[in-house]
Length: 91
Image (cartoon, rainbow, N blue to C red; front, top):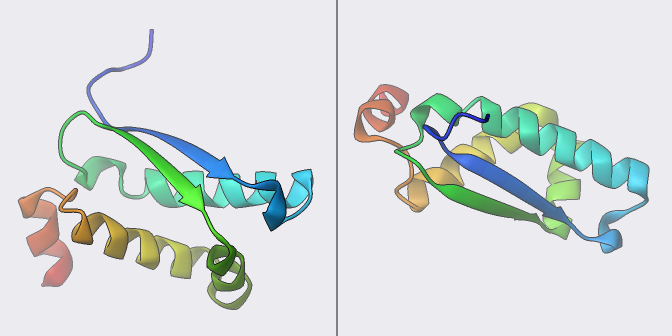
C-alpha cells in the first residue's frame, strides 16, 4: 500500500509537445524535479502539473537544474512550501 503521508503528483504532457519518447522524457525530468521537493512540501496534497511549450525550451536551454528552479518558484508562489523549508532556501 502506498504511503498516504506526503504529497502526490500527476503529470499531463500534451501530444503537441512531441513524440511519445519526448513526452516520456519530459515526465521523467518533471518527476525527478518533483522528488527533489517532496520533503519540503506541506502536508498531504494531490498536485497535477501540466507541461506547456515553454517547458521544452527551458529544458533545452537550462536542463534539469532550470526545471528544478522553476518548480521551486511555482511552489513558493502557491504557498506549497513549508515555512521551515522556505526560510532555509532563502538564507
